[in-house]
Length: 115
Image 1: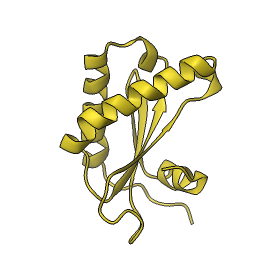
Image 2: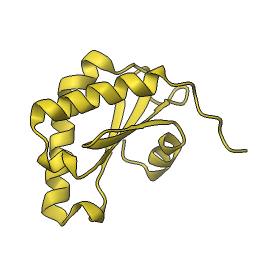
Image 3: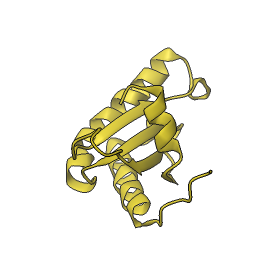
């Protein structure tokens, strides 16, 4: 995902926080993703300088490639927001955090949208 509107739409969906990521999830709009899994990545300046933010996003992209095909659901959009732990946690812990977060957001009841 690259459009700001997509990130804002997903922000209104389910979310789960782990030490390394904040995962946001929402079903894709009809006809947009064609049953695919879409993911977006973000890291705020609070995380550190550009080098640290890019490193965190690269680690999250690698984790998504390993975990999402097995645990994510087609037709859903996911946004991963890097947290401090995304730089310091080991890669297996990062994978575990992502797997846990995916399971939790799909187990939640959908949030009520604001009018």
